[in-house]
Image 1 (cartoon, helix red, strand yellow):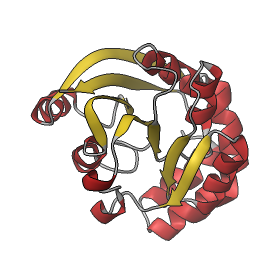
Image 2: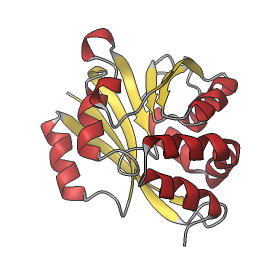
Image 3: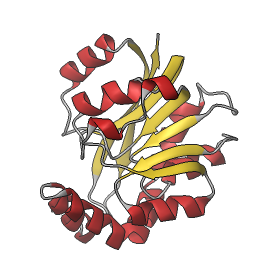
Image 4: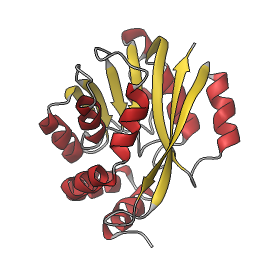
Length: 205
């Protein structure tokens, strides 16, 4: 059984995009606190930062309230990230963290919402709670990878029950990515339902 927060948000994910926006707008502050308390953002940041220069420039897909920005800055990342999310309420929370340079509201189910490869070249991209939860991995990852410079890094999490590993592994290979590490990020029972994320760090050739 899901928590009251997740009952609303996950229920909305099977309806309209407007319903997802409304759910996150309503429960944003509570969701922000619960995700930070889970320790998952800190674990993801630690796994990725071991590969990054402190001056690296990154982008956060499905940035939500900015928990990954907070976690990366706490581990020494100097430059603020760019971020995209469907919820205006969550973007306002991300803005308040001071960890983001540019924030944009975007429906990442639509391919035109992703930054164009010709106009950007990030040192890294990061995503948690988006790929597999709200956007299929095979839709999101090709567009995310296009925003990276050669040699750039991708850190992304998938919920262990939502994404089959073998097709995901094949897609990463097809996209020119080499997987560097896999970290299990458990979310303990509490305001959120107990679950496990697999956080992968990969590098593009």
